[in-house]
Amino acid sequence: MNRHYIKLLPIIMLIIMTGLSACKTNNPTTTATATGTPTSSKPAETPTATAPRTHWKIAFVSEGNMYTMENDGTKKTKVPNYDASCSSPSWTADGSRTAFVQGGDLYTMNIDGSKKTKVTNHGSGCSGPSWSPDGSRIAFIFNLIPYVIKADGSGEHPLTEDIGMDDWRPEIAWSPDNSTVAFSTPFTLDNVKHYYICVAKADGTSFKIVSPKDKDYWYPAWSPDSTRVSFSSSDGGIFTVKADGLDLRTIIDTSTVTKSTGGRGGHLAWSPDGSSIVYGGMSYGASNENLFVVDVNSSVEKQLTEYDSTEMIPGYYYPRWYPDGLKIISLFGNVLGDYDVYVMNADGSDQVKLANVVFDVLGIVWPD
Image (cartoon, rainbow, N blue to C red; front, top):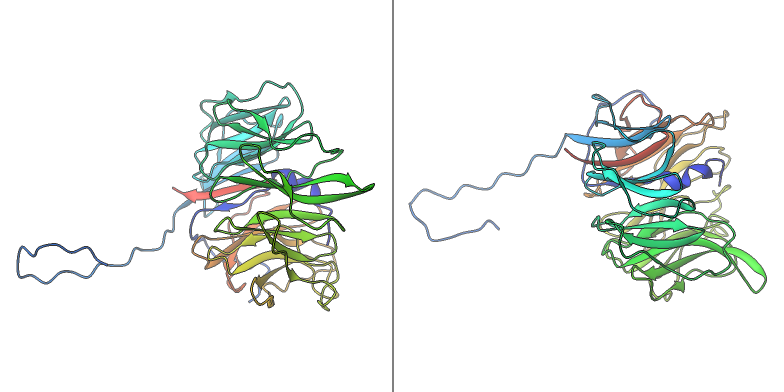
């Protein structure tokens, strides 16, 4: 898999709250009602269905500044108190707050730039903050060790002791039930260094390596019911395992996927019903990332996009599902570092470009 954009990994996170709509453009495409005692003889009215939401807000970072905008790309607004000295932004699931690193320490503030608060006092060494789903805690990296801290700055503690890390891929994934954190970290076992998928309770207990120990494993992602962790391997395989490290399952085995050149994997995202995983990968003979979806029970894989270019444009990656499972949102980028955000149906059809904006970091979409 093409890894030239790995520098973006510490700061990419897509969190989608429900469905989204926007204007379609000509860009790369693929294809019980409660009842009570009656008070009159008038028949009860049948409840009407709730109309799909069409109004959303988006937060992102572009050229060192943080912005919000409408889902159609209008009303782009600069967020105060965030500039090029800040990095690694993360947003709460409701879009109300952001966490980021400045001067080596962790800060939080409201999405309008108010109430900027210093959370840590280390002076250096902090990176990669990630909010818990309920917004009460933040996982982050300090001196190459994963930590958790309460949003008010109290209760800071490591998730593991020093296990010989000499590098870090800040891929911190909270379980949906807020109890457990999964992360990819390199260390040496039996004189061999690999990246492993590890999990630990948010209170710092029950640390465990849950991936095999034969190669590098990256991109942890939780199933919606918090029982399994998915991850990809350096040769493009995709796996899931229980949070206790048992019942390892191979979802995509690159030794049997004849159409894989760069392999599958990249950032993984479970469908809301837990039946499928969407991810980026390269199809046979292609030099660009496309999107794929696989059924976690049958391992039947389907390619969603058919983008190819001799210009070595990376294509699609960092996909996420809408909560209703009907649409997928993804970054689309090129080698110049320009990124746009696309949304499409779950089958890859009807791709829509949300805005003509160069995205350094797409953060979150939330209801307005």
